[in-house]
Length: 312
Ligand SMILES: [Cu+2]
Image (cartoon, rainbow, N blue to C red; front, side, top):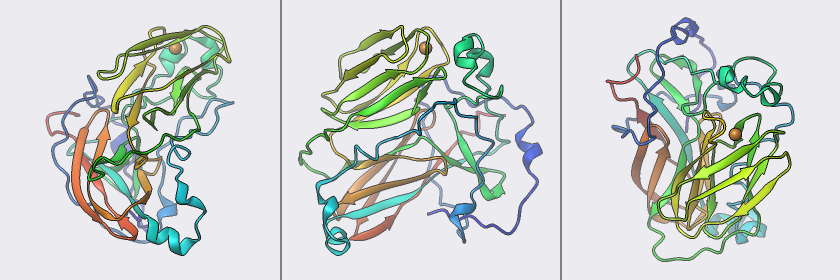
């Protein structure tokens, strides 16, 4: 688990502002090369410095990835027996790059073409969400914490079946972006697609294993509930606003998480045992590790590497 050092700060800002081209982001399937060791560990996680975050649209609710989705029956047991019943697997997702980190592409210019969305943003800088990172503390010229990585159990659960939670997971269209950008839910669980903008959005998805869908939502407040039968990760996009895209991960179990703004993830209530764990990112692909999960806290990090041929 990444614990940043808080006593030295390097003036690397200039290096990040050189306007280098954005990573190749073509089809979200670029293979990640390897998984190197996490860097120096130290003291206080709370001092991670976020890169200048985009201003959230005024009425945007907090993104709620899948805290609800991961709710489990043992939740009411007292701490001790909960420990016995399930373990926690947590860690960080890193991005390593050989060259200068590129300045994120600003999608405000595109959002501006839809004034009713643009007015939800207080400043003309909205970084594209395809590669979002957070600087480490102290900053590392060649490594950052990576957000929006789906970390999930990909092997070791055998044929166990898990009942889908009754709560829905929300995918909000707000300020002409999807919130959250990456979400997960369970087979059979409801995905609620909501339009919070007073403009026409359509949500177009072409999954490989589930039926494709394309739903138009011309008015603010419109909702559409949908669920999925097969596990897979697929893209959603808006044909009206080409910059709008997001990802939906459907799983047949609750043991998964999406890395947050500090690049951290946590999978709770996992029965101790041997598992294969996969980390997926829309641009950098998949990494897989085998782990033995013991009762209590277990730590596991993933490091994606930008292929040397891309970037600047
Ligand atoms: Cu749209």
